[in-house]
Length: 324
Ligand code: F6P
Image (tube, rainbow, N blue to C red; front, side, top):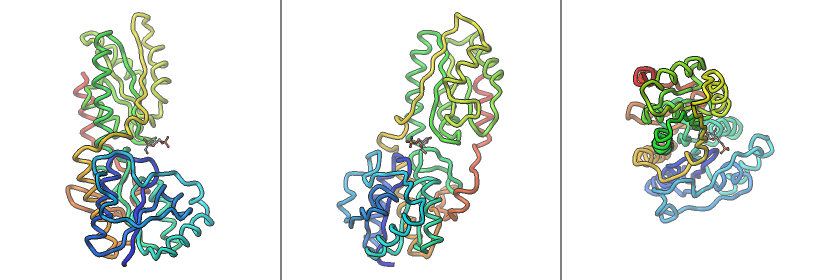
């Protein structure tokens, strides 16, 4: 293998740049030609592909977003789109790919590999932490800390006015951001999609808390089956039925996707990027390079997207015990 390409795809996450940098520099270190594909699968179809040098990735390790830009491509879901993408890769002589993204990215990579056989290694880039085959995903730690900072600030004003806040965090169908920011932020209750929430339990918890606390925070994962933070707040408010209580909703939204990556994300991203190139050279073909128990592990795409990563049991227990 002499020529490889790297791209970022799906929702951007802090640390993607550090990962791109690691892929580019490791490839050059190993004597490969390396290309950057812009706007993910969209750019692969449009031929938006440029040769990268070591200096192309200078001064990006600390930056959020992705210098390669990202997209969620509908065209790549069509056989015609994938054929065009293959033709463009072939024209550049690209023999291996590094795909940085989440489950949508790997689903595309798996289909593409099955059709055209270009070896592809994934790096887990998503704030959601919802990928099987790695303890943490690139961007998760930064997103949790952003959510935590927001929760701390909301706590100040909540306490000043003796209010109840419902704070919605991202995570798609997973509750990792919710549970960790909830534990760190001392939330009174956390609602995650992995467990069925009984809203009467939320009411009970708020009533208990109101006896001796000045504020209450309920963290709601965006994917919770009970609904979004606004819906949940309205139901709970109706059940509490006390006009003296003041209920507020804050949706943190895309603020969780931006910002300078934490040290932990930069190191994880660098490690996955380096391992992806080493994996390609070692003959891995359709695997994600993740880190499990401090060790780099290569997991087939089918498992990364097909198996569910559970929340840490102790985190659920912690929430229950520490919010009494
Ligand atoms: O997968 C990352 C993520 O930020 C999810 O947490 C969220 O549900 C989704 O992407 C939002 O996607 P978009 O930026 O396309 O609205």
